[in-house]
Length: 404
Image (cartoon, rainbow, N blue to C red):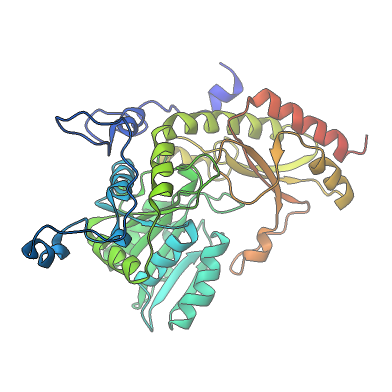
């Protein structure tokens, strides 16, 4: 058995989401057109604003119809909603035109003057910006907490606490949260919980089964898988689905049918792609951990990572996104390393088939905890290229980093 096989968590039976169907099987067949008549393999792309009703009675009863106006969805977006609900085990899914808009919808759905919201200090930047701008203008107080606080969250709860946000692993620094310990404190108090589940693709972590109310994804990332669309998903428990959907409708959030079709198309191969991201990410993380230029690797799949135990207990795999810290190096040497990379792109986002590597500055987005490594923090996304080719590209980059 090689090092990666020893590090890997078994991906067999990742999600027995419908009886004995595994994720690969479910995602190939869920939300496809069915019936006795012949039909295409993929659902149709339906462009519509106005929906016509055949009778006055049908028109007057339209509010009870799922299909009643294009902004509220068409057969194409309904198919994507149903597929994501099956993937995440949700009562229903609400779509948004981007991950950031999905975040805003989740925050605003529960924003009331005088309420209190808890947010992990390593949260995705647009979520923090939404809290600082939108929530505070609505008279909501926000407290940022140490993401590894676990059951200690009880000390931060107040009678007016309405919502707790989770993100595991956390943005840029990849701390794993103890979700059951947090929920044990918040659920008895009726506090709504939202988790950003983008890192797992909705495949390797099942928050709703653990008791989380909303599992949010930037479907721009792994659900799309091809870096060519913007989309957000809010997979909801039955207790909050109607509220979230109604609020998204009031905000006018809707997804174009072409983007919904592309996301549904990407979803069919999610399980296969995530397996490759998992394996390649672990291979690169283990290789980087042995490099003299690297001070620290942040990947919960590595046995010496502080969050490894929680990751093994809660997750069934890892995505291709992780971080590492370089030993102190001058900016020109870092530029020499980065500018000469052939297979790693430099760009925002992640989750596509291509590998990415960028420098990050987590300290700029912290207020409750401190991030002060001695060297430059980096974020890497392992795409679908062959791991050996990616390692060769990084190895040449380290040669340039050293000035040789």
